[in-house]
Length: 224
Image 1 (cartoon, rainbow, N blue to C red):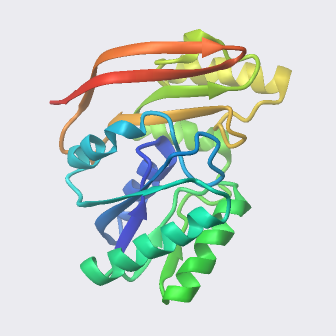
Image 2: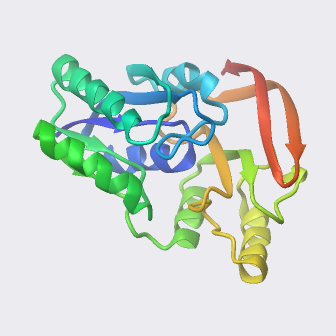
Image 3: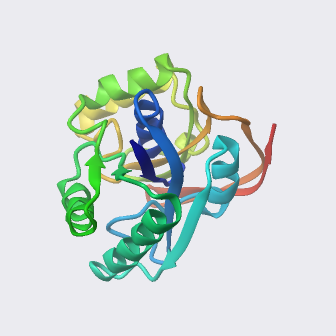
């Protein structure tokens, strides 16, 4: 099938594309840039480089801005998916939803309205196993945002590797945080993977952190 993918540049949306490519053709990426840092639906950290991330994958990007008002932002998403259907003749939409019923149900509603199939290849996967699979499948993932105690500034810019998973598992057991960031504990950016045509290199970054919340400000990237 010809599919469009909801794309944030983070680990879940990128890994969902990777899984989908095993059986389907991913013909476009759909990205919604939210002006609301507390958006209910859309990824915010490091989004300023979404066009470079799409270029790194070699897949056409449809990028639309939304004010990020709860529920209203879904109208912007629907219009964008309609645009993708007209331009690329997509038959379905890929999401990186793992456990968020809020997100999955709303995308399903839009897909039903537009006569599209919704494909959630990561839905209800054990979250620690998902992180292990990312590493096994050679995904290079960088943490770009944190928003939960006891995650500290040192996590910003850290790569998700075996050591990071071990530390995250300990924090999960002690503080009940979600190891995959499903509660909004952290955000990520994929800089390389088997489906990347080019690797993303962070040339200049800065950390902003206060009160267990922080963002990796990525000032400059290059594609290699």
